[in-house]
Every structure is written in structure tokens, then in C-alpha cells.
Length: 155
Image 1 (cartoon, rainbow, N blue to C red):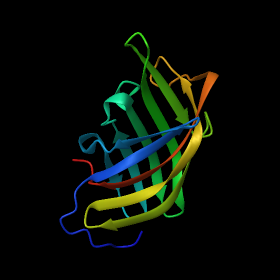
Image 2 (cartoon, helix red, strand yellow):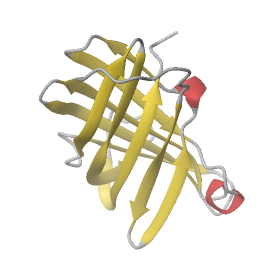
Image 3 (spheres, rainbow, N blue to C red):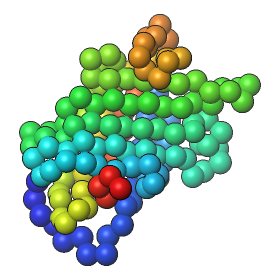
């Protein structure tokens, strides 16, 4: 990672999620996003929540996590809490080994304790009733998107 000047920077960012031909941009939920580790290895956790009412009525939250190594991202996982028509929720999950979730880092920097990272993701999510321990891909949900965030370390 390279050093960058981040004077007075705060946690900011977004995830853009593409499902079929629809695109949703969700701002970073700063209190639920962070990183831990070092310059050579970091665990990154990004949570985004919709700010637009129309999107909020469809999705509650999106979490993207991955290990950030010097060579790129490894072991990505994603969870999506989706609203149903009866006001309930469906939980969708994907991982690199289950759903083929992949993250490509396009930019990253670390200055003081602020980690700036951006990239793209693609894969498939499946439903789970036990928080991703088992994932049903009987009705798969292909996902892709981008992210660009500035994160503080675990507090």
C-alpha cells in the first residue's frame, strides 16, 4: 500500500450494487465498517445501508468483507438483507468458494490509521436461514458492483 495524505479525513464511501439490470448505490454505514491489521495484511469489513426510501423498501443492508493482502483481495464474503413483499426479510450470502464471489482491488492507500480502498466485485448469492453456514443456490442471485471507501480501524 502507498501512503496518502488524509488530513481531516473521515469514514466515507459507498457500494454500488448491480442486480440484473438494476443499479443501487448505498452509502457506507460508518459505525459498522472498519479494518484491522497492518500495511501488508488487513481484514476489511464494509457495510452499506440504503439512504433512498425506494431502495430501503427493497434492501436493509449489504456487507462485503475480505482479506486485503499486498497482492489483492482474498476470501471475500457478502451478505444482503433483502425485504420481502410481506414485510419480512430474506438473507442472501456468497463467498469465494460458495457462489464464486471475487473482489478486484483497483486502488488502495493507508495513511496514519485511515485505509482507503476501492474495487469491484462479482459473484452469485444464495439464500440462507442460518447466517451463511449453509447456502441454497437453487434460485441464485447474480451480483456485481463497485465500492470506494475510507475506513478507520476497529474501535
